Amino acid sequence: MTEEEKKKVKEETATEPVPEPKEEKAPEEPPKAETPKEEPAKPAKEEKKAEVTAPPEEASKEKPADTEKPEEKKEPAPKETPEKPPEKPEKAPADVEKKDAPKEAVPEKMAEKLREEAKKPDKKEEKPKGPKQMTGIPPDMLLLFGKYDVSEVVVSDAGLAKYINLDPISVPHSGAKHANRPFAKGKVHIVERLVNNMMRTETNTGKKTKTYKIVMKAFEIVNSKTKKNPIQVFIDAIQNTTPREEVTRLRYGGVSVPKAVDTSSARRLDIAIRNICKGAVSATHKNTKPVELCLANEIMLAAKGDMNSFAVAKKEEVERIAGSAR
Figure (cartoon, rainbow, N blue to C red):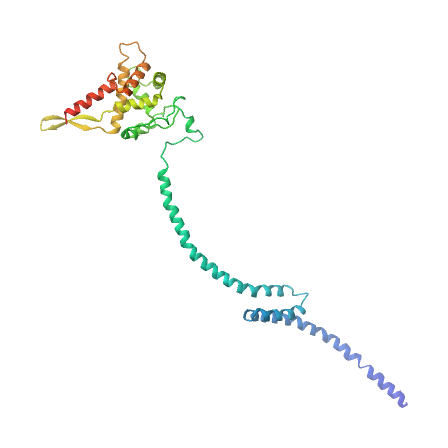
């Protein structure tokens, strides 16, 4: 072989081993690509720690370096990092202001509440304690016997006002729900008490419907003759026939001595209604007048304070005897 051929052979052999290291280097490159995948995870944690201590300017410089390498795979990491550092300095002054603000406003609110509570009892006292109203029916429509308004009636005697029931009602009949109870008579309507007292006779005992019609007709007669509310006329008659003093007997040794005593308001009202009914019933004896007319006359005479009224005459007699026994 000539020298030229030897050189060609050497050149060919020199060229042949060149591709072999290239093929070996090709598989070595992918592990290099794998290493950067593991590396960005570690600096991400280190950068978060650095961001807490480092100012926002340094964090902004470091972020673009991270975003350039894992742009496609790790996008959420750079989004979270810019939000966290600015939030901390902004919240700190806001929290301080909020904490300081309520401390100044609390005493003012408490003072306002105390003022409102102080005003509430005054409002409750101003509200008048009126009669209980039935649900669904306005009090204006509750007329006694369907004709007379009870809300217009005025009781001038303060002692009797507590025991005279003037609740709005259309039919004065409670069905004896207050019977056999102490001091429950004050809850019964005043007109119903008149009806019950009119039943204390030989002819009307136990006849509630009959006495109810008698009282209703008597009120119609009073209304036609006086042109006033018959309930108001009846209340005036009660006030003029209630005795304020009575006589009782005290025993000293073996001797009984009469003594004048004051009469309670509940007893005064009972005596007045009883005397009015007794006067109306006694006027019917040996007389052709009906009971309703006699009751209407007794109520009208008692309202005027006339001595021709049985109830007024009885009151004056009791007070005269009590005056002599003082």
